[in-house]
Amino acid sequence: MKRFAAALLALVLLATPALAAKPKAGDTLPDLEIKDVLKPADAAYLGLPAGGKSFRLSQIKAEALLVNVFSMYCPRCQTDAPVLNAFFERLKASPQGQRIKFLGIGAGNSPYEVNFFRSKSASPIPMFQDADYALHKALSNVGTPSFFVLKPAGKGFRVTFFLEGFYENEDAFLKEILDAAGIQ
Image (cartoon, rainbow, N blue to C red; front, side, top):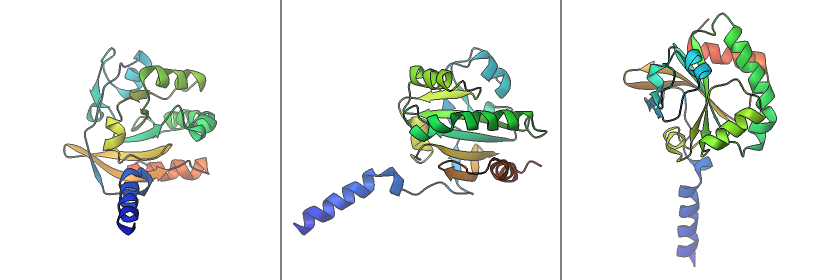
């Protein structure tokens, strides 16, 4: 009986992403490839050629990236979408807005689900599908919502900020993002 309980506990621990090591400042990530069709407005914002069907994070014209991992099925993501949309517009309009770019990755979401979420929330944020969880896995299977600030480092990216959950104070969050990006 004790062996069964120990084996069951080990299985639960291995299968529970929430108990896995979370990203932290200084971690490195590969240059992720996003396989999704670029909408013209998203391509223009990210500095990428229009009409592409995939791109690498390193191709985005920015000194740093703010990446939001979300899911259409995440109640917190749905509730906080209007606040996040306003934050995106504020960041984009700021003097630093051309130096840091913001995008979302729909963990486990198909193109239909991402487009539904984007339409329902009237989001201006570039959002991309990750139906097979490949990007989510590369980002340490984080919960939703999660936020990363990534800076180019060699052939990949260095994590300079990570938050799992939602921020409580928009001003403090903006300052923390810009500080982590090294953009003043």
